[in-house]
Every structure is written in structure tokens, then in C-alpha cells.
Image (cartoon, rainbow, N blue to C red):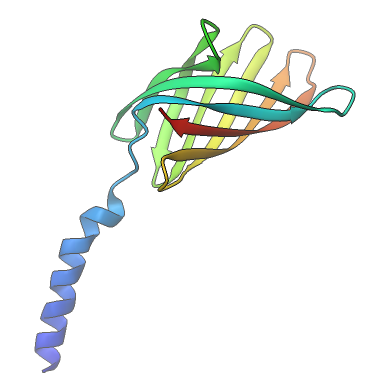
Length: 129
């Protein structure tokens, strides 16, 4: 009886391990908004679009404001449901940390430091298009 239980447990582990180890796939087009406080403290929202291509744990692509203002994704990695990348704009580097939701949503924060060292944090939500 104990031997049968061990065999069953081993079979379950072998069958379920690939599902647990499989990283989410963020490839495709995304749109959403980045929400932050302006210099005067008033809430601001900016529409954002992105297009990602995932190869294993490496992610490339573009992200930025809607339209032609797209920046190249750098250092894009995905580990389980954690997705991080950077984009470099004319006024500094944006570091992005997102969680991949099972509902086709990416949600997290953007940290930005300009060339003067001023830091700002914004929330970012993207939905698969």
C-alpha cells in the first residue's frame, strides 16, 4: 500500500512539474495606462502600449506612450509570473516590475530616475490586446 502511494505521488510530480516550471508567455500586443502623481500632486494617467516577444526567459520588444513614441525593451526577463524590463527615454531610464496575471493582465510599477537624480514611481496596468 505504501509502495503504491509513493508510485502515485511520483507519477503526479512527474506530470505536474512541467506545468509549475512553465513561465507565463507575455508575447503579443498590450495596452493600458500608467498612473502617477504630477509635480503638483494631482493624479495623472498616460495611455501606454507595448509589444513583446518572449523566447524562454528573455523578452524583447517595445513599450511607451500610445502611437509612435515607442522605446526598445532592454534587460527583459520573465521568471514565473515576475516580468521585469527597462526602457531608456531621452530623459532617463524607466525600470518596470510587473506580475503576470492569469486573466491576461500585467500589473506592477515603474520606477524612474531622471538625469538630475529625481525619482518617481507610477503604477502600470496592461491588458492583452
